Image (cartoon, rainbow, N blue to C red; front, top):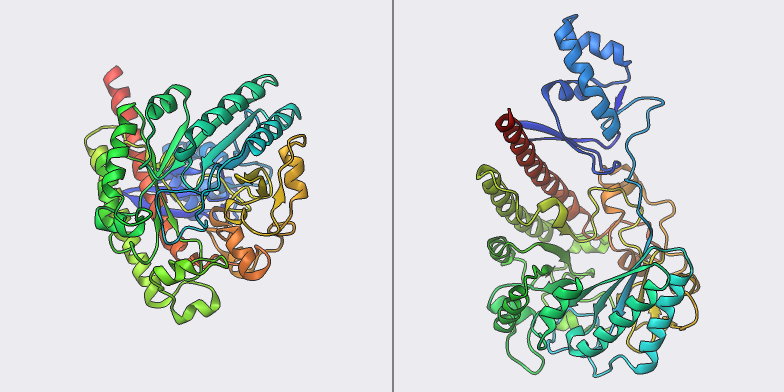
Length: 489
């Protein structure tokens, strides 16, 4: 019997827990007996382990044996011939789409990878989008197609959004395929009737926010001048009046890092789920694209250690320290709800994300680009990633060809797959959760995606905090189940 090779053990409120990043949902609260088994699993047989730990005491032996099925099923404990629990049987396969409706936006965020213009979805491209979606549904390879409507600011093209959604839904239904969608908006443009329409049709809603007050105004200024925070507050009120709980997207860079704990506290107080994303570049607030507009307008926190491509030195200390303060706030928030014997709202493990980390299922790549994910531009450009839609080598959308076929033919980054990895990642406990970070960034930096993310050391600091908070939430659910069981007796 051995432990999972990447097993992480921790303690929360005096209760031990184990997390196996190679497993599926393998976060387990450990009893004393289970912890003893894991601590002692060094290759001896189960009989040898139990005999040593029980000291021949029958009651202790029974207690130890009772823990074994759960530990083996979760994969925390390994034994020859026993297969750990795999992913739940998928109900079907879903193709993921990014639908870029317009380059236009009412905000002028300095780190945005899009050159703003008045271009928008034309009739021909709109028809091609819908046609290619139907061809994909008709292929029989997918039970679902999920689209993210984005831009620019997609709510500036709300009419086109509704048309595409309605037509795609109808056409997919002809082939027993479910079409679903979400909207990625800056939250400040809310057309009349939009909240009610979104709520009625069940679309997801993600809203970008980078700070409170002056910080938001600086990070996300209005086109032509002025701030956007008051507009965001008014927009959120409209969305929430329709019963929606927007998912908040936080892009973190040099210009808003120090104020991130304040924003985190506000989101927690509002009961809004959120995701932290680090700017997608090597200059901490500039841009990894050819356009250097962002580099001129955002703070450059590039230390000498960036020559090796990995955030380090004083810059790394600053970033890690800030996120530790943020996760201190989150842990206190979750803990307070556990103490009050209330469900954690919003559910932490189900809703919180940090970049593209995947802590509850192992991954080989941080996103589906080139596999089951495709971005379509308002002018018909085709790319495995939305951040490369405006590259010269992007493909062109065809209405009569399934999207997965077009994806296979659109290879501006070659195979865009991780092949051999690198020694540091291959030895790292967190490889199944991180997979090297953003593949586009890695590919543009090194010509392949086998390297380390420039934010590698940030991920190493954050992952244990997320797992610990998830374990605290799980402990609260277990305690509530114990109370319910006692009350039923």
